[in-house]
Amino acid sequence: MAIGAFFILILVLIVVAVLGGGVYLIAMWLRHQQLDPDAEVPHTNSDPEPEPRPEHVRMDTEQKVRFVGTK
Image (tube, rainbow, N blue to C red; front, side, top):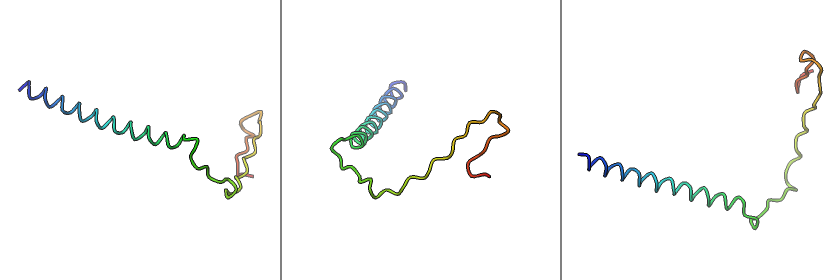
């Protein structure tokens, strides 16, 4: 019985190692594609104008805080 349990444990460890290695290889391949300096760079001229950034106001007390979008 102990030999059978040890054999099943070894099989499970092999399967987990193969699956983990496969996930690691896929992630490494995708990361390489994402960071490739020779990859095609998208054109930024067609991008819409960025939204204006919210106004930042320094307040002395918390009771005077203005939230973005309120009057």
